[in-house]
Length: 302
Image (cartoon, rainbow, N blue to C red; front, side, top):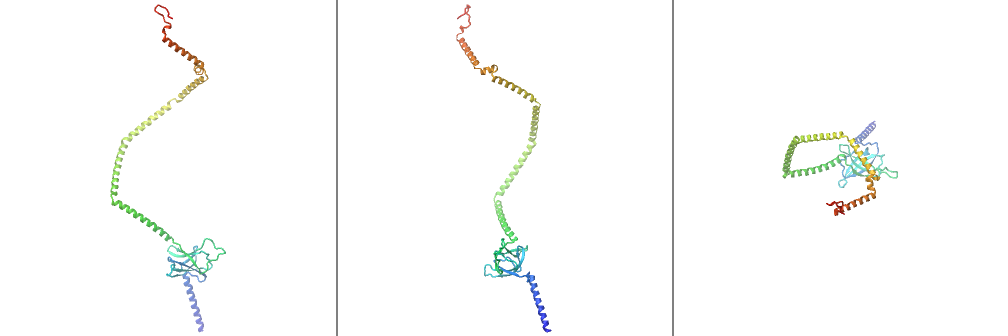
């Protein structure tokens, strides 16, 4: 009876220890009933990675970080131990990448597998092997880096602008500029006054002259419209037809003008007659006494 009670106490203590171990691992996110495979990676900087951090494959949680070891005598001082589900085979070329986990700045591990799928003749990475590591900056870090660069550039530009403005204020440039502005303002006022006078005095006269010119043009247009242009054009056509008839008759050698132009013998006779008349007038001027002349005694000279 005494031994039976001790056995019961031992069994109860064992159950309590198992429940305590199971509860502790459950709180850590470890499922002791699911077999896992372990892998390792070496980092120079963990960027805030902690134990029990999640391990993802393409956004799906497949394990967690079991332990973090460090040895600062080495350049890459941190060794990370992870465990993932046993049924997952990692192809050759898989990397352990530190990534941002959520918007609160947590760090997790992403197992980045190669794009090409693993073929049958390729063997997966052995369990317990060391994987190559990398770090993927988060959104806030990327924005922070770009923002700081832009802010630095903007500060440099502002400094340059301040120096330029300071140099302008130190010299006489500002006074000269203000004086030029005053002079331009005075010129604009003077021009505005002249423009007002012109609009008041000259523009009405110009408008009246334009109205008169337009009225005259309207009168001329009305006169042109009232003129009997059709009759005038008809008379011009008749005159042109008459001229064409005369030209046609001349071309056909009809009439005196046509005979004169195209008949060579008539031209020769007229030319001979003119020559004879010229010779007669010349002889008459040279010997006027030879021609019809009577003396005082009524005798005719030879």
